[in-house]
Length: 341
Image 1 (cartoon, one colour):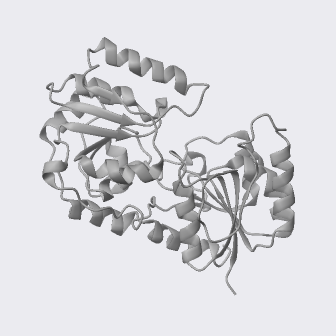
Image 2 (image 1 turned 90 degrees about the vertical axis):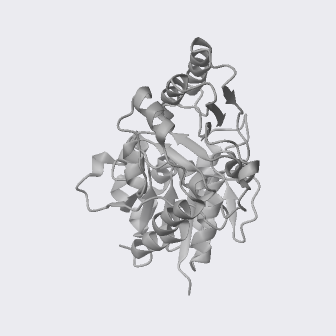
């Protein structure tokens, strides 16, 4: 009988601009032979062939306790053998004591540096803590429960047709796809662009997600573009549903992402669509097989962009296929989840 996996994640929505990939994760577990049931905070458009229970976090004006009570009812009535919590320690905290008392092996995917209170309250229940890079979960360095796995993207989903060279933007036209957040360090990209000749441009897709800080950072970026006189060279396109990126990525040759150490999944997506990335040394080394600027200053980034080699689609895909495909990642996770260790 197939192992019954409870997959808990913030959002299931195949048109979401930030978290649509979670559907691909759940589906890949299903294709790997698991009997999957999903609980998500917000349920949007989905074609998943197994049960998906939404907690109603998208219902504005409703009771903030109702989703918690619904989660408690679901985790205590559904039948499952393992729990995999994806990027939400709040849900982990709600279920931790029940899973511990029932001795249900529980696992967490967490690619952040932070350890919020909900994490500290519930980490006792975890068999393993999975992270994409060694820089994630630094508080657990030396703890055998921490497992560094690399990242994973669905290479079938991103297996888009190549675009002719004539139809692609010139290599001087840089593409960035990430949320507008201080952690993404967009200011370094903008300052590097100011040091490059006028034929270099930047097109950015993404939006602020955290009202507490991201909206202020967005205003700072608009002001920086104006201060540096780059209004005609920088375009902020806003967010788009993830499937639209299948059409956007192949039109470009060069992708830029200056996140310091972790692996940003958009980099892997862009690489699989044939874009050569400009990355920090930490992210490039975590992905493997890539060169990078000598340091994270705008001057070094600009100099690297001037002299970089555009890699072939085949080279880029080989790196992702061998090291960062979602199928490979699920196989690595299964080495622990299947035996319950």
